[in-house]
Length: 484
Ligand code: 5AD
Ligand code: SF4
Image (tube, rainbow, N blue to C red; front, side, top):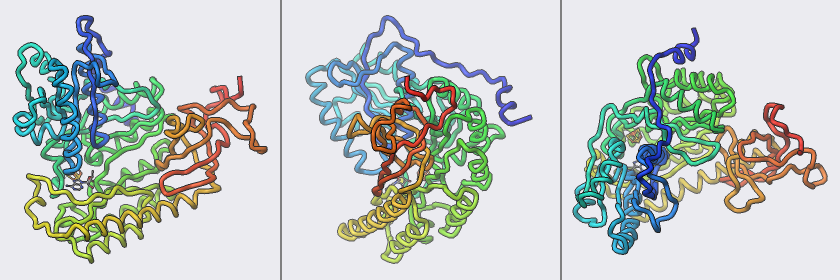
């Protein structure tokens, strides 16, 4: 029996919400999200919970009954931004004292006391594992005027039975696990999001199928460390295989991976399925073994490189991106050079680079922190400049090649262009019509549309984006491609 059959026959029942609307409640909720994809996915869960109680989402602050900020604590900068936003909200509360203002997410967990005592405009504080209680807490504020706080972390909450309320689109986040047990010494996540726990495989598969039925063409399986997904006897490669084989027309991706848990089995599974994107975001954090050890990252540079080598042997076109923290406490010039060397050696398609930000309660917080600001700035600049050159070099070599692109949205700059993504997660800008050999609109083919999979000839590149012309559709013939 195939793994998929086994899972489909599993009798576990998953109750789904159906966007129930209570006629008595016509309250409008406005929600702003900060931080990582997990937070965006959580916002959809909160909206799913609220919709069951009749709340409707509004995109306008003015006239909203409830304002929620879903917050991030990963670096000091992120928290500063949210404090600034709270200053704006103070004025809204002054104008309309009945509006309920709530802080959700990691900052709620970390700074509950400060937020409740110092920020008078805040009525509600709800941590990442207590989102089911948001409607009840809002009601309580409205009825009694008392502030509400719910910040208990759970060992079991996965919101497996909550149907997230998503905005329309052809890509979707699907959360498969929560929390993190890795305790990297710089990171606040294990404290704000709690212990690792995984959703049921059937719950995830159900949701993925529902997304596909609704027209989603690209699903990101999400978790702080998806590689440690474990439900009953199923690990992450089992899950990936199950979803990919059940939905062969849908692109499946995942993020984020921890190098320590990335198995050969996962790489082999990726290589086996055409619809699993050949793209791995694999945070290295530093190129120095000494710093990696201080960070408690559990791997050496050599071990990390071995994973990359195997990935490239199995998937020659695989794309890589990474996260790098510059200026971790005690980082020397030699450590920094080792990071630059690793970046050059790996040739990442892209990198997210951060200056180390001390976070209370983490182990690194008490490590001495003595790198002068001008050195920090220079090291970060060197990393960014090097990576930009590499990204440009990689992208430039794509000019003249044809890449398969999923059209995701209109381009930000012009309605005459679309933005799509390659399998390796590169953004591609393409015109909203087919061009014939004479450079005019090709009237034999209908115009491209969001959700189309199109082969695109890359004609231009910069370090962040590719540009190209549609060559032909990559779709089942049944999807009438001819004009009219
Ligand atoms: N300072 C700077 N960057 C951090 N990250 C996590 N914690 C910190 C911190 N204290 C970065 C890591 C992680 C990414 C999500 O954020 O690179 O992979
Ligand atoms: Fe933070 Fe490390 Fe867990 Fe990632 S793996 S969330 S960096 S503790």
